[in-house]
Length: 483
Image 1 (cartoon, helix red, strand yellow):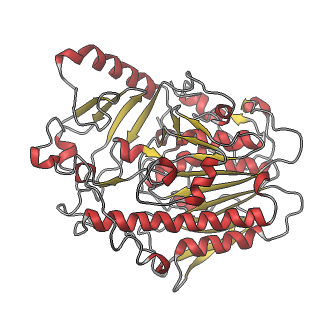
Image 2 (cartoon, helix red, strand yellow; image 1 turned 135 degrees about the vertical axis):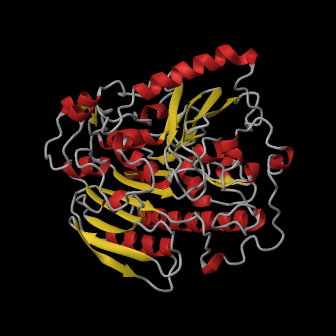
Image 3 (cartoon, rainbow, N blue to C red; image 1 turned 90 degrees about the vertical axis):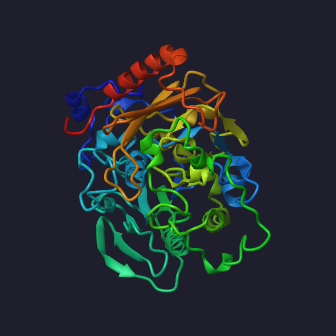
């Protein structure tokens, strides 16, 4: 079951921490691993927008080159099995900030963007601020109310679902007061975000540690490139067509109608990038990843120049993955590997040996507890993830054997139906919950490409029943907001 997920609705509410509170009681939850004596680390959190787990040269990608992001993994710890629990922007970002599942925060989808997250659910940054950190969030926030209502020391963000690369809009604020939206002309939004991040880092803060969240627009569609990368991949780069790209011509054997009828298809369905080609989408996507890498490098260079790089814990991840032609799909949402897998790396040499690689299944809900652990702050018991920092010392075969996935948004631009599922180390079961209900089940060991649907086959009845029961148990252990 998910960690700390056995609480009833009443216990969940009792375990929540009022954001206005000023005392961190150790009785709230598990004691974080003790931080070595000395100053608490600064924290930097890079979050990509739809960056695939394999969109890194350190992960073996033969096309994209990401030396700055690679550095975080090479000099720290890299996870080969990191996942999101709801592959959609706003819900994933809520999970990252709260350490909780979508059904528990109420941030189910990309709707209700003008309403705040419940005030009784703290963000990990709220708890850091209570403990003496200065906190800042910059870039594409894209979450309920842009979390503007939280008491940020510095805010420079936007909640624009259109991913406006050209002449972007940002709101700026200090000490909990966020000003009106302002448009910026002739600048790539992620470059501007990092300009402002570095300017904030330059400000005097005495002995206070800082927590800086830098959340990028790239590489999300509409796939604008910064001018410096206009010619990148234009000539000579071949984009290989995924093995399943033409499977629709075979009638998607074994795939349910809910999967077949989804509109997030390259070139042939009525979506907002329907006219795009796989070649064009992939090349622009990778150019966006490189632009992100440029800006990660600028922050690393600044920290190094100031001689505080090794005093700063740096986390790199993404809100969700992205299809690049698998089954002719783009976008995310579905509970298939390209969509739910995300990159995750942490660099902090004081507690993490360089070159550490871990295969345990880790989730977006683990990030909030991990940041608190890095800062030596108790992890509240209502958080449903757990710190992944102990994995820096040794492997843990019992860390997580299974986890629950849920996607809610309907209707949506891509006609992806609501569904839920369980993923174990070897198997996956997907349940499309709208009528007519449909199902997928895979053995990921023998079929990592998820091409052979085992659901309903008599020889797999026992496995199917077992996965179904375990999925129901996982869901029952995650309190639903308002239930």
